[in-house]
Length: 618
Image 1 (cartoon, rainbow, N blue to C red):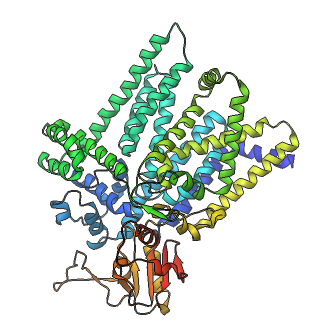
Image 2 (image 1 turned 60 degrees about the vertical axis):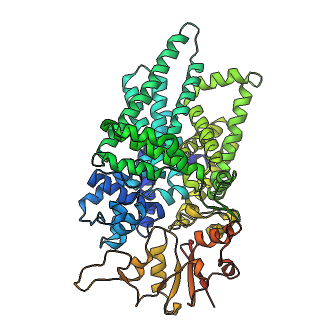
Image 3 (image 1 turned 135 degrees about the horizontal axis):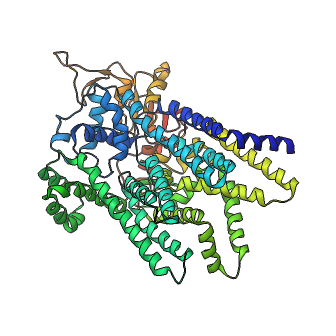
């Protein structure tokens, strides 16, 4: 056994780069063949056409509540395609942020190939996931060695939640990457604040985070707090004033120059957006209270042309703050509300994290806390100062996880575990580092072998879960809680059903001749089911009808349906899990004439991709 582990260790130390590439290749393959058959999820309907319109028109009228960087990256390949954009419909020409109508027309009604658009706009996000994975490996390799680097990479690459969302055109994977790079750059600057290269890189990645997702504004108070901790760790009576000035000036420079880069980045995105149009969007996009407080300031600043890009940035930031405070309809553990559940994220994390990972997290937490206390149990503050001096990287990661967890739990927006992604790279790294720290602390050779064998078993189990779950990653729930088939009992929305299975539903129905003439479909998501079920319709002159009536469903099995219409006149009904659960439990607060309680009395005859339930009506 000793020879076997010695052989494994030799392979890791000599071939760690090739192993890392192999891990990333497997992640890429699993994700690519998943995304090929995933239909559009809700947010992609807004993000993809918005990014395309920024690059093509230099106009920011769509999806201002998210910064442009990821949408730009995703839309860039689309510029090489001959696509028709719905720039002649009221949702573009007249409405304030008509992103959904523009999106559905762009993807499904104007004769474009929706699946091709989705594939090529998702590829850049998947490539970014590969870059993030390699960066986690590289970061750990330079600081903690090849064993930690490969374990951290494997935890990232084979996480069912990362595999579920690492290819969708949303901000979730992107802000995880941007936050990781920004904190990495901040750590390098904090370690050597006089190094100009470190300072410039910190400025750039702070700005990149801000144009990735508005929640990155959290880095401002976090960097301030970590700078104070850094000053405590380097404290010397003779140089404290000089250190405070040096770190304070540098931090202000990062924030100020970062904002300048944000302003410069927004210029080409708003260059063709007139002040009058932007004033209209300010008034139409902000809630009444926010408009009363800030609308006058924004419209006044908007009259000064150089400030127009910053006005657009501030508008988006205010829209997100209002959205977070307003909440969203959420189903959680048999209840539904338009506010939030304090336990939503802790419980979601436990349910959707594979058990072997939970075991490693618990072991790491216990070992880390005991090691910290054991060092100087009666001098915790001095211990903290010494720890921050010698382990600033680890402390930064730990405090960011704690800070971000606090913000998530106390926020008013419960939309999915994907919102925890900014802290996940740091979780993977800390767990990997602590696991091997435990291993090296074990002096007894027999116990070392047992620990190594257990670790190999846990990682084999972890990887097996990821492969076995393919391609149904979005609804993943650990088998301890009933697995994905029982996800509906606990969660909804992007934790289970984000609309990813519309294409699979059409394929399932076409393969089942016993379905009957029609199947009622109540679908939640970003796809238009008619695109997959029906033929395209043309007018008398042979021109494609480019609107919602541009489909001929007479020969298809598709019958659009909604809960408000009661029981359908068909043999079968297909209902998205989000509608099924949220509609039932939200009735407690907003009762309607009809609901889907009668369906819960039945067993579904099939589940398409876990997210769409098919029931026999009669």
